[in-house]
Amino acid sequence: MRTRREFLRSTVRASLALSAGGALTPGALLAQTPSTIEPRPGPELKRGPLGQRFPDLRRHFIFEYYPWYGGPPDFIHWTQWDRVPPLDLASNYVPLLGAYDSRSTAVIERHARWIVDAGAGAISLSWWGRDSFEDRAAHVVMDVMKDHGLKVAFHMEPYGIDRSLNWASDILYLLHEYGEKRHWDALLLLRNADGQAGPLFKGFATILFERVRDCHGLEHLVPEYTADSTWRRQNDSVRDALRGSFDHVMLLSDTTDSRRVAASGFDGMAIYDHFVEPDRYAGIAVDASRSSLLFSFNVNPGFDTIAPRDVEPGSCFSPRPFWPPTAELDFERGDGRELAARRSLDRIAESFAAAMAVQVDPALGNDRRGFFLMYLNSFNEWHEGHSFEPMKDAAALSDVERAFGYHNPERGDYRLRALAGLLQPVVQPAG
Image (cartoon, rainbow, N blue to C red; front, side, top):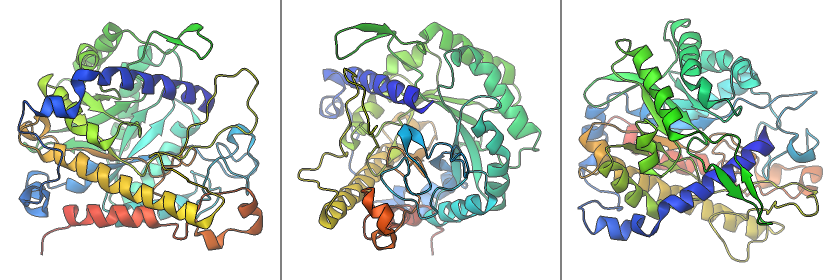
């Protein structure tokens, strides 16, 4: 599942790069519109006006959340690429809670308190199909989140090549199993500024190339490729089935290609990828607005993914470096790890400012349509190194853990503290 997702991630990234195009640069587009990528210091970012438009404002800041980790003896997901838990983990960082089990109520309780303290009000649950490990973990996660006033949406992953054909029926399943059967106690019904509310679903690897070319020049079909017309039929089917049940249902794709998003019948785009730079957010938002699409961009600390220790000769695998690009970065040195932490802090601030600016810009479609949504990416995707969940302080690592070369910096909670410092002033009541 993870290795397939890595392939799809590279395909998604290629699609994003192609869709950028020369005409989609922020400078060229913004020369024709009063939009700006600078965060506005005025009342839009204060709790007053924004909070008055969205009384449930916290719930519009959503952590990407992964319920896929298992504890002993199998240590599901902690074992990716031949890692051997509990000390050798599929992560460049050791979490503060160690190799935990996502189904542990004690773990989820700790997560929920961190999420509330940060200022967010919802999570987007990574979902891999009916009766998957993640599906079976969903109820206990929702039970705990509910007790902390948090709501839950779903991030629909590429769990099979027939995922798109089951898209509509899976959405109806999720609404029945985690909405209706629970009397709507925890499922997120996102409320727009006009008071209308409805469920929110986002897909990963939705708009893909039909074929890709590998490093040897060989062309391959992408099994998960779905024609835009198929997505359109599925999305129309969802709306037809739910007509009259909600004010609306929000269906989001993960690409910047506004033409294909519109053709596929999605309401808008929600960009997951950390390689979409914050200085591109404004241009993409302009293009989406011109296509009558909604948009959401993520706040992220960058990308620091693990790699296989043994790569098959002739493989096209190429390890991705730490992102944002940072010269002379040596994780074997303490000052190198602190430099990486500073770059992550910069990315958090930059992505927050850029995402916030386009959300409240009155020249863009979201503000005009009373829609506000920001994803926080992620709470606990440890494989790719962009977790806001606290990690161990460097000094707390054991000698054995240090021998694995983990990247933990001096303060393991630095990302969550930085995010809270940005988010709390926005969501806290004035006075």
